[in-house]
Length: 336
Ligand code: CA
Image (cartoon, rainbow, N blue to C red):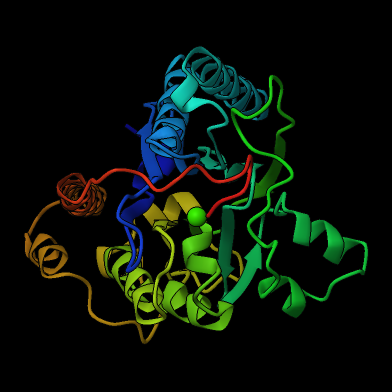
């Protein structure tokens, strides 16, 4: 298998937080052999299990559409989100207890040719850390963000505004949905973060930037959730990270080559200079003599995937145990 994005190292973690009894966030990761990898975070809203159902349904539907095959990535993402909207809306209309449920949705589709696509509805976010600098690749569909765009609120006022949870777009609440889809380039060493507002609303961006730029993904997801918890984590917290391999160019050229990077030594595939030592499993994989680096990187990716799956399973397990009756339904499109 030569598709490059297969080698993107990823990790995911979702946490109920310190206050809520139920985790209405959901996330998923899907891979296709042609080299496409899809990550998605959904932050559900609506009482009596509606929020959980909306977010899980959205992740499931988007994954289904993705698995049919990728021809036009931007069109696929749009179609997937529109399909999820239709499914969630239909379910909400069909059952009184689910009426008004909805969810945010943010997806990152990494392609095989140094391209990625981001789809967004709501106020979950995608960030990219490139050369240590954090950029936001999404624009929140929230009332406060629109006020900021109109220069009626400052970002600081928006962050503390009582209406900061009011969404102007969401999946499932209305019959139709408008989806933002943007294409972006992918460079060696890029680190992508998808998250719900339970992270970005509680942890300052400079701290997010620092963790994302310096920690391997398996540690970074834990560190980010821990930072949110240290700040009280009033909301559910979900983080997904995808790291594109990077290494110093062996030829000394200014332009790193993504394909060449994938054949580089595993010790340099995912960590910048000065980063902490990789996981023990990664070190033991690296120690295997005589194996082709590409296979080692595959082993690293497999270990990372297993770790991620185990963490996610643990998180979901914990969440299942803690499931309790939902709080009263919040107003339409507004998270409690
Ligand atoms: Ca939330």
